Length: 209
Image (cartoon, rainbow, N blue to C red; front, side, top):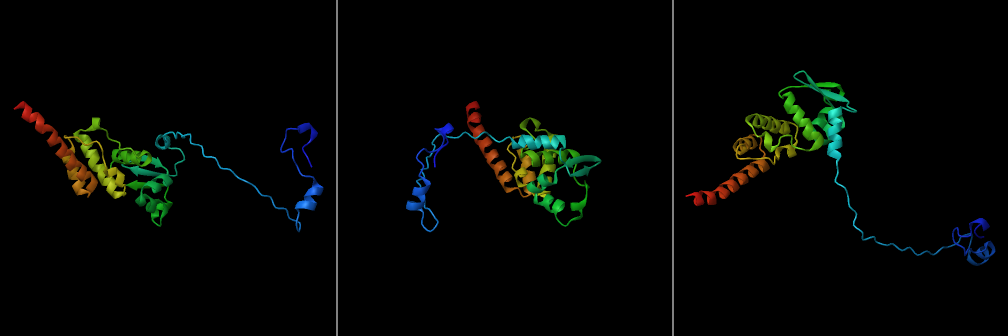
């Protein structure tokens, strides 16, 4: 046995002859090979890029690609993907894949929620980003926040209750919402925020006096 003449550098060049193999190494029709395996550990750090899945899912929502159910809110239609809503909310999961009548419906009509609030809600479900920024802290955004907290409570979207953009203009209102919907973490955040703001203002007041 050996490598072909045209491939002198192919494979291992120290093959055992078939005759020697049969006479010296084969026992009861079997041959045993003893191998040594060496595992080397590469210490070079691997850089893992940040996930941009939320951008992809956001595009999926914007383009309505592959949608299989739609929600109608005050006449406005929102096509969505059942699997994504079910993965993010146990309430949607029970509604869309359980024994409820909505599981077989192609279009579901929602009440007690506005189109703008439901749009914000879907944005959060798909991208896990809170739809209101600090720049939006107006009386209108307070109303949207209140509606979103209600929707988050309704669909068991707990992360929706943890809003990072608290300001002195909105903290009182947000704390009231947190009390109403039993958002303990958000309530604590508001209390801590007020305490820090008061502490930060004390030196300024003393210096002014």
